[in-house]
Length: 307
Ligand SMILES: NC(=O)c1ccc[n+]([C@@H]2O[C@H](COP(=O)([O-])OP(=O)(O)OC[C@H]3O[C@@H](n4cnc5c(N)ncnc54)[C@H](OP(=O)(O)O)[C@@H]3O)[C@@H](O)[C@H]2O)c1
Image 1 (cartoon, rainbow, N blue to C red):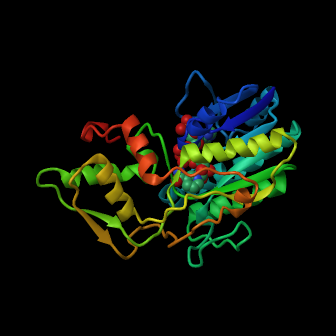
Image 2 (image 1 turned 180 degrees about the horizontal axis):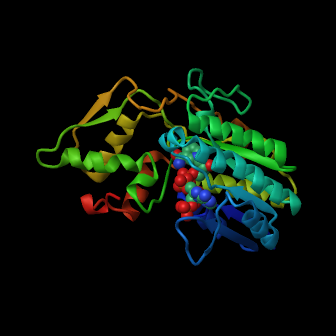
């Protein structure tokens, strides 16, 4: 029996991953959560080193996927200690515990390790983060490579996928403002038309991770840094236009052509996915089809569902 521990299985990506891995017969999946407990997961605070070691020793997994993190740039900017505890120190703790049982550790990172001035970025391009989130994730990458005897980092760009609240993804978090702009007497919604993003569908990332785990299960472990990205560039303004079309809303959207975010963000961090593609790994669902699946499963019902 091939055993996989998914740390952070209750998050946006973690849920898609647990769903994807459940399709493998002969695999056993152990998922953890933190503030959103469920009967299918073990509640674990990754800042508690002893609890992390106990969980991993008890499960004795062949592979550990670290999907738990603080991924909100504004929270990281205002609480760098929390960002460090989750994105750096906990990665070190989990990787050390995985070493103890000989498990392969896959940690997730971000395109925000780059400054966005010279895309596309290869896995070996020089990182230069602009904000506290990017710094913490880069330090987390280093913590993994220093600690894990067998480890890999998968860098990802802006994610979207099945949600349980609009705010879970920076793609779907645009929906309440789009809908408000379409209401009678609604004010136009201003959307960033400066930063170029590559929205990437969490079920596709989950499929990529499953393929990487299959390589490991077959004795061909992938190590170092790899990257996966969707291939459709768009600004948040363009994302909002597509969301409005999918929702059939007559939205009033205003493009903002200069950056306005309080937290500095990179312009274009397009990640080259060539290392994984060369191994025959990957899947890309077109944005318009994928976002319709998300909106069908979680329909817009007005302000009452705008959590
Ligand atoms: N979302 C994106 O656009 C994006 C882009 C690039 C890279 N990434 C990376 O992809 C990974 C997954 O991101 P995501 O979007 O799925 O994040 P998410 O939806 O915010 O989920 C975070 C996960 O971390 C868990 N968690 C939070 N604090 C914890 C703690 N103290 N102890 C244990 N678990 C804790 C959460 O558990 P509860 O929910 O149960 O509290 C949840 O399962 C992260 O490494 C992130 O940096 C994300």
